[in-house]
Image (cartoon, rainbow, N blue to C red; front, side):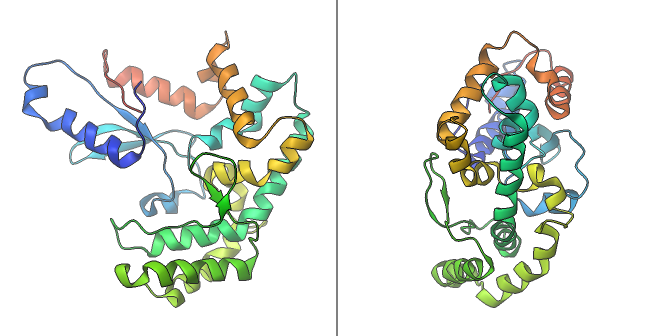
Length: 262
């Protein structure tokens, strides 16, 4: 597997491999990618009923890979199942689960704001859908204040900075935010699946102080420990989560050889 910096760069590489006569007519290459779902609007309506399987990723009439059903790869790495399998000797799992749940509760309004910004932008425009301060996780930021009024202010600031370029008014996004918010609150349909819907990076960084109290290190250190255990585990780690198992099965059916890009 070959990593890339972002899904757009990955899409371009896979498109070339899928359509280029110089490649397809002279070689037997089967290439596929796996990318984060992010907050892409086309997937939003399916999130009340997760299927625990990767989503097919198509270009024109060809499949070029899969999209994670959960928002991003970190959503899987912080799953209590994975944490228990990789760090059981270091983690009080019930305490960790409480910290994860509390983290989601602090993110309900901010996540609704991020989704509202994503749903209101004109495709394929790249409108910022996050704000805040550096949080110790590479290329990621998170605001310390994530209450209702702070989210309104965040939406308004982004619209003021980028609204003219994207023909976007703050009132339109705020209205969408208010419409979405009940489903992201604790009793809402989206919150019920927060490990699928919310940002894994947000969840991870929002429980940073709890991780430190549990002596698990800063968020980046915590992730690094999980990844190291995954990479060195003698167990078939793809069996630990249904979506990992189904991705493995899908890859096996996709072709006997691959030049994988991820």
